[in-house]
Amino acid sequence: GAGVSQSPRYKVAKRGQDVALRCDPISGHVSLFWYQQALGQGPEFLTYFQNEAQLDKSGLPSDRFFAERPEGSVSTLKIQRTQQEDSAVYLCASSLVFSGGPIGELFFGEGSRLTVL
Amino acid sequence: AQSVAQPEDQVNVAEGNPLTVKCTYSVSGNPYLFWYVQYPNRGLQFLLKYITGDNLVKGSYGFEAEFNKSQTSFHLKKPSALVSDSALYFCAVRDGNNFNKFYFGSGTKLNVKP
Image (cartoon, rainbow over all chains, first blue to last red; front, side, top):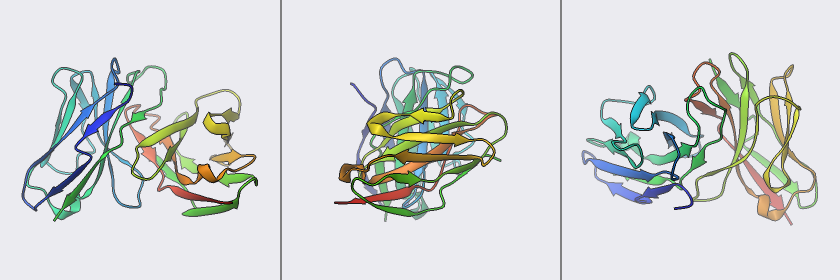
């Protein structure tokens, strides 16, 4: 597709359930990022992939959060045993360039809004 | 530590008037600065960036931003605001030591009144 696609757009989960959020980046984009945006706040970095390699996961808030990009394209962010504090919009972004390369901007998807009851 | 501050939660301006949305930053190494806009229930859209060169950067939709190294600022400007410019604006800085990370401000809501 022409842009970054995320699904589902909205997800309601009961506390303790596992959720999976999908990101389909722009074709050919090497870099893929996940960000968490709490209500009224700016996005906060979660993790970064260069192709299939997860080069930085320093922003993941706990070991309940897991991300993968097995074939270097589509990525999935998984949250196990969801808690109310996980409620946020999860944004995926992709970029043509990679770490150390030219400083490229990010292209964001519309986000997946997670509400944990 | 890298950080971005947007001191105004909200900016109100009349259509046709100039607008400024403020941003200051703290970064180690060279600053790589960005502005993004977010419309309701949408993802962030890139407006413009400063990497190097001229301090005045021109971007999409008539927006521009002025980089001021001595004041560590990167204010977003537009000479004549439109009602359709009403949205949430985020300033971001890319980590000078870790290109993988962008740090975003908390956002400024721009209201342009007819």
